[in-house]
Amino acid sequence: EVQLVESGGGSVEAGGSLSLSCAAFGVSVITYCMAWFRQAPGKNREAVAGIDDEGRTNYVNSAKGRFTISREHAVNTLYLQMNTLKPEDTAVYYCAAAPCGWVSQDLRESEFPFWGQGTQVTVSS
Image (cartoon, rainbow, N blue to C red; front, side, top):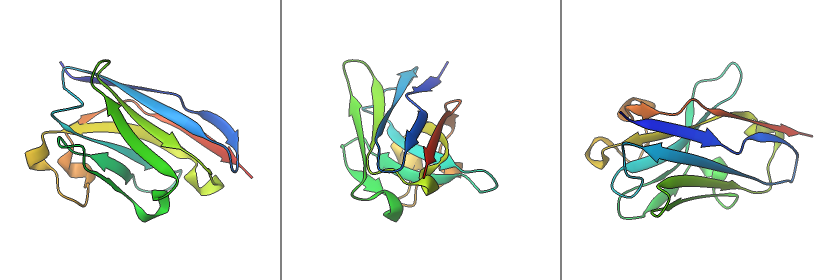
């Protein structure tokens, strides 16, 4: 059984930082394509960042230069370091996993069969 368990969300003022973690069970964060998505109130879920089985990363434009996706083999965990947070980053953040053969550069939600429960990030102005 695959389980993805996010943690690290919370409330922070604009300009602050948060680090999200996603502990993976039943899939390897090294051999699968992993991604972070987010869903703001009243909006569709959108990709934030992805990392493939070769360690190549890609980011949505709004995250470039502020967010960093990474993974640690020893603890089979995916991370998202978020710096210089803005109120528009407020959302529920989800970890997702997929066999890399299923994933395009666009990081479409439909390409990811495995999802975590989400963790809330709130950025106040």
